[in-house]
Length: 299
Ligand code: MBD
Ligand code: FE
Image (cartoon, rainbow, N blue to C red; front, side):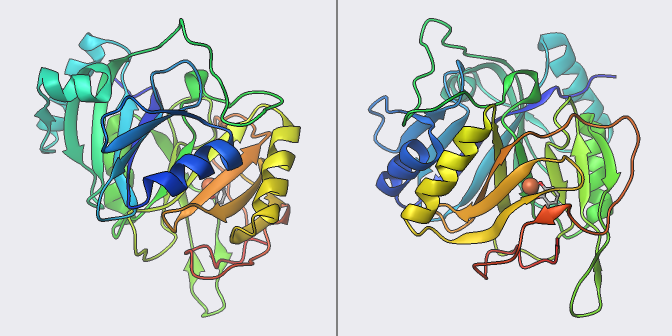
């Protein structure tokens, strides 16, 4: 059975490209690439042409997410598997694949309505060293673990889990969180490689398609430096520094220029072979700035 191998790229619709240029480079340390197209800039995190496309638009939200397959055979097998399961999949034109800097591309929609793509053969600019947007001690954790993880809006958690299972991800509920209103939130986490989770959902209703993107530094000092810069610039922090019980990553969540969250992290463990669940995080992650959909009791 074919399976996606990583969350390879993201597209984001943004209203303020200039604010994003500064944030991505000076706060996160990503490399900004502008090829003069006018309506978009790219963010590099490694040798890939890009990992994130920022596309000027009327909304500040996820535009699409790209799941990688190993080669054309596995790509075709996935298109067939999805089609047989009744999922509408459109194989994209060569022009559309070129726009994404990949060899092959198909477009579909997940049960939450999130534009989803599968692809193979990303353009890797191996000749062009990664040049961070600000000094960095180390690098971003990518490689076989992909870009990071996303928390997505899904009204029907079961349907979402079935869809991502079809793509080849595995996982389940990893927390039972008792909310002040008496309800229990049971977020669902799924993985397709060593990254502990590449996608998660089930945190309740959300205004946007995406709550946060998590990415990871190889060096603790880069997380500390990013945290200093965020505090210095007085950027909203929704969840303070803390350590998650599931992936053991040290992270904090701060607002990006689109008004949703980026989770800056370091030190995650690898995906487990078997499932377990937790009732709280290990330490920290106190709620600070409200209104970003992360007003949940993790500590
Ligand atoms: C995560 O990355 C996360 O975003 C939440 C809410 C819980 C555990 C790990
Ligand atoms: Fe997260």
